[in-house]
Image (cartoon, rainbow, N blue to C red; front, side, top):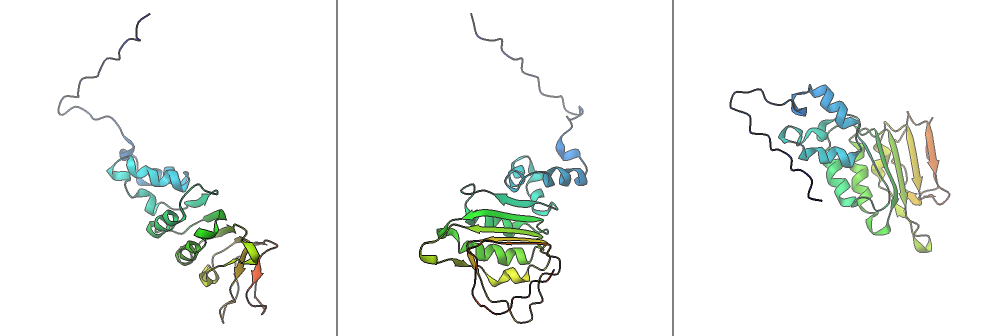
Length: 188
């Protein structure tokens, strides 16, 4: 039995003929809607679709930054987050290894300027009760509605910190340690 039949190649369209419809012809609202339904990794990959899509993800509203342990290099997350110009709906990293914990400081500084609403940071358990102290920029994330922290230290709240006015869900792991035992004004 021989090889399967070969596909016939389509001759090139003659000049002046109607071009095939493409995604680039869709209204920008529809294109943004498509990108917003993707995970951050897939949204960034749309840059390869065409020139018109090259930077579309950077301004697409409502992208969620979520990944699991070992799924992406934390330094790349910082680069992608720095290029994203819209508010961040959700940011979740469930397990940050010790050697990458310092890059979370950069994430928090960037997130403070992106109106993050839901924030989850989980850190690997360190030996001898040495936990990463998260950056105080977390206290500038005023739009938080959900905050989940695990295996880390909280810095002292800055003077004048009035709480998170929109916070409805707070989850602190049993190993969370407050750097200062002073009053922390978590307001509902």
